[in-house]
Picture (cartoon, rainbow, N blue to C red):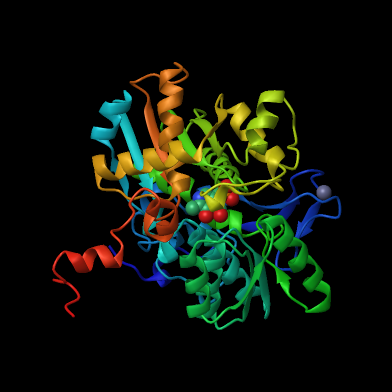
Length: 418
Ligand SMILES: Cc1ncc(COP(=O)(O)O)c(C=O)c1O
Ligand SMILES: [Zn+2]
């Protein structure tokens, strides 16, 4: 297997961008954010043409990263690609946990092994590569934490300055990473929605390009590779059920797009997995909208949770998430912080996989949906763990208090002799 990006087939058949709300078309190769109507733009390709020049078997000969899917990614020049080895994360069987929960065919797609320890690497690799291609020189992002780390890393790799706005209580790992990557970091006393307002204002005054998820059209393209990769790893048979921890929901929207594209390429059939959007009790706008049968979500007041990536009070692409969940026959479900930490520790103990609280939320949701009979034990179930547990030591440390230093001294001072 090769890792050389140069080995990918000659790039894509990108045709245009299209508003996901009003279907207005936008020219490729130009700088875009949202449509005038406020709708996020989606990238469109001539998949009939791609189908004639690229097939499933060629994928395996591509690089060992998400760039093996370059023909369905928006970058048109090899030299624009900024890669740190994102994607091709392992799909791991979870037999012990499955037995405990009553699921015979349970898998974990472990996105914690990406550069910067989360799936955000996929979206930011694509977005920063497009920034290079389009000649953008100043990037700014509001982030719940992990997108900031990924943007800081890829901007550093591209040599582009990054301006980062995160809630002041983001996990320490995100703050330190961004600083180490040389980004300009501002901690904001508020939520990601407050950070987004600052970035939007700086677009005009500072000349920043706004990399807010879905306002920037290419992050979703990187994230959709989670769907392509899963299909490839399952030998082009999609599972029955996918659990996805949903904040902005871009992973769900991206995978849903990938499934449609793969069908158009003739790689998979019509069958779709039930998409399960997992949220937390302290911030569950999608669950609420799903239960009420609404197309859009309401702003969730006083959003709070240890799963910082799920603290998104009003996802911009709510209507796209809800459409994917509903048309797949899936559901939306919230779990408590205490339940998700318990589930994360259970998974680590059973399988040796230490997941982010966001991934842990899915484990807890799985248990609930099996108990309720919404899912059955023979179904093939994939849980997306979107980040590494190691990035969330504050969240887990409440369960593992260490002996105070004074107490350790009394034990003989073996580690720190006086
Ligand atoms: C670890 C983790 N999981 C899930 C999410 C939510 O991602 P999405 O926007 O795809 O819903 C985030 C977002 O910050 C995250 O950091
Ligand atoms: Zn529009």
